[in-house]
Image (cartoon, rainbow, N blue to C red; front, side):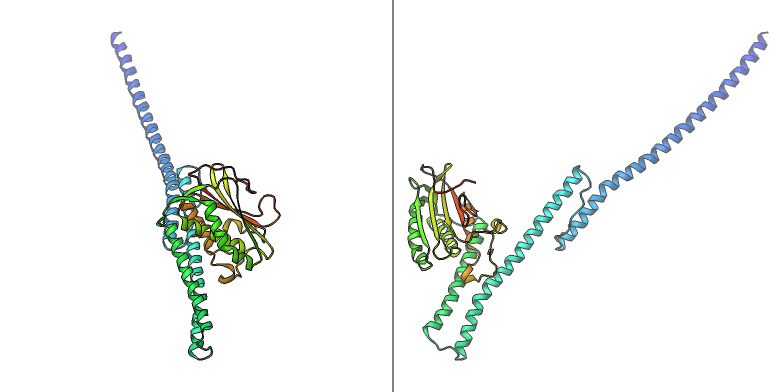
Length: 341
């Protein structure tokens, strides 16, 4: 009986080992299959993730190459809202800025060439006529050349002033300056020009005249440019008013006219270089298009700001150009038709 038990037990032990081997082999196959499946899935996911990362970078590289070659219209698609999407959006904003600056640069070069060519053509024509004997060598004909040379000198000086101001290299001799007194002197100087155009030019100082820390010559240039602009765009019989005072703790200077006004489409651009609301005007009748651009740069150099309103509040036509400068002395509130923006 003991031998039979051993045989039975031996047979049972042999059967258990076979089952264990089969179980281990099945588990091994399952683990191997699961590992291979996981590896394949991991490779697919990795490829997908890598593609999602490299595709935007490839687009950025291609767009960067186009911009480097001078094509500022290049843009990249924004396909997500993660860091890569933010990078693409930032790149597009940079590309738009570069395209705008390139357009402005080309326009500036074309405008400068045009502005220089006009007086030079007049000088060349007059000189050739004098050489050929068409015009006699008289003071009147020489004055025509002198006037064109003066236009060239003024344009070159305006360009130099604007370039220095934009580069932050404009030297300012800042001293305490009475704004009302400055405007009074300039209004008196401009009276003959206003009278010749049959325009009533007035000055109003509300309360005590404000005092600022400023360069008298440069701020005088600002006021002069604003007055010339207002007189140029006001019809005979019109009114140009200079109003000086204080508003909200700052010195304010407003030049108000009841002229033709500024179209809403032109209003955001009147302080741009060489911008004229009427492109058909010549330099002689419409100015160089630099006066208001220079005024803005000079005001900003003094820590102030300048803006335009057209039509002014309470008026049906005309325009108001306002200069705001930091005060260094107290003054009363300005009430000369000014509306703070």
